[in-house]
Image 1 (cartoon, rainbow, N blue to C red):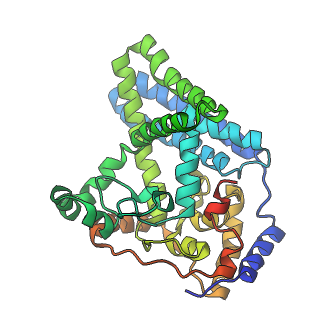
Image 2 (cartoon, rainbow, N blue to C red; image 1 turned 180 degrees about the vertical axis):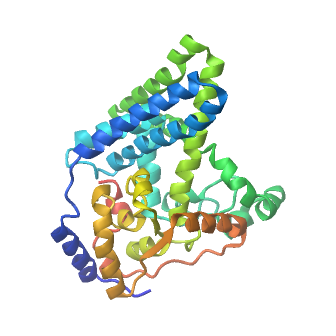
Length: 370
């Protein structure tokens, strides 16, 4: 891959600024968020009250509407919704801990810092590795995302990696949101032990408490806990499938690295855009434009389609990749990757160009949390 300099990066950023790509208007996002909540609530009520055949039709649709609503928390977490820190934080906490049961602090650390800082960088099982400098989205125990995981596993897990994980991957993604909920609580517990009860922790705990109160306790008292928990689990299992389809399509099947190296090279080599028809792209909340999102995490999702054309032309001029793939094809590639990931040998690392790295862009850890 051609090395990028700070002048190359500055050229791209200036072109995007001139096009208005960094402008933000939160009004449409808030309207869509509340419309999706209403739609999801109505469909959920139909699933609960209707006959079994109707429930089977409406429950996945209710889950889709609520999952898309929750994705607006992703934008709030990146501060790409608004220039107001308060407004971004409000969307983050409404969409993630309150609606989705996913801790805001945990998500910000897992996604903004680690995933955006080190996409497709392995190391969670590498002896002596810095776990903070690896992508948690590749740490999919009991699966292997590379030969590093396979070599560190015992004989039983190695058999699973070789013969089973490709078939088990998609069914297990239905449990994704529940695993992240447990990890959210573990993260908060660790923060409290290390730093005491911070204001951000208290806010997160209050929102998470509101989630379980509204989803489990109050409905359970009204309708019984067994049907309530059954509905809750089924709804969020579909959500896990949806989320996995969005995120793995953008990265799985792309190169895997042992070390990050130059952040611009890393983002461009490990991320792909997903092509969908316009009627379906709304459900991605900008995550179909993963390349632009990873290069400029604070860009509002509504600006990304126009920005993608500018980035694509810039990448062609500079001789750097700008990957794009149909959504269905990307899911096939991700599935193939999981069948053979146990023998995937990670690349030593993208070559570091100190001049380009000095720009502090491209989702690097230095800028991922600001």
